[in-house]
Length: 319
Image (cartoon, rainbow, N blue to C red; front, side):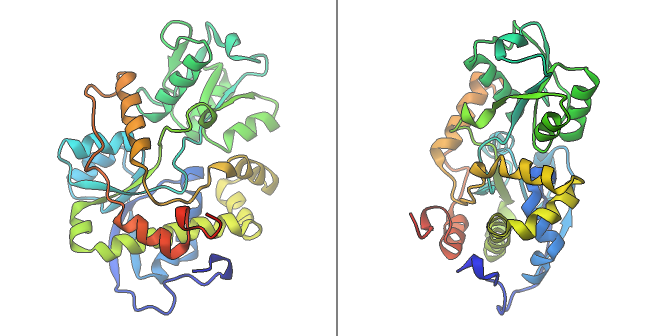
């Protein structure tokens, strides 16, 4: 399958029409998948999507309200262990945390953070854990040296930073770029450089979908990863769309997207060891009470087939 040709694998194939309920990320976290949705690629592949914005995807899965979703494995894996009928079926397009720590211009180093208020996004989960681990690696005790403030994500987090409610924050792009370009802040850390083995992005599917329509799971992953690889390799087409989607000028959108291109791996196949590192860190920081083994929480069957078909991950021609 040559993605450079721009001919998707579902073209000319007899795709059975299905309707699914999906919980897909928006913003930078879901940007190329939203590109696929906008271009009608899921529809072209016979997949009609109903979308849900859910605060608690685990409860929605438990109630049978969602068929497939993306998100943080730290949310899903404990649920799987505790009996929720879902499984991790692939990585997201990037699986390392694309988080940035930005601070007021006068804060030049981690040492300058002592005594300051830092936005932690949420009270628990991958973003506050990442923040605490990066602070710890840089000589700051997150429980004693600073005050952590749950300040939301994306625009909400940036608003608290702009208003001075917090002196620094963990945040996604494009807000790190926006802060730098406006002279309102500087980047203290790209967090993935401190936590390369911490996994933050997976796709999960209900066991009902996996057992009853396995071909559909594979088809969703096919569209998802084709779209992400297409966007990455057709930036001249993708960036103008992305700028409009993010409500940014094209230069800012390009800077934000290219600043994270190293994370844009498009490798569907889940690495068990990285999942286990994630669970162990959550336990270490008190965000999960019990130690959890990731054995049995994921199924790489579909990811392997899609990676092979689209020549991704270990199946790339240069590997």
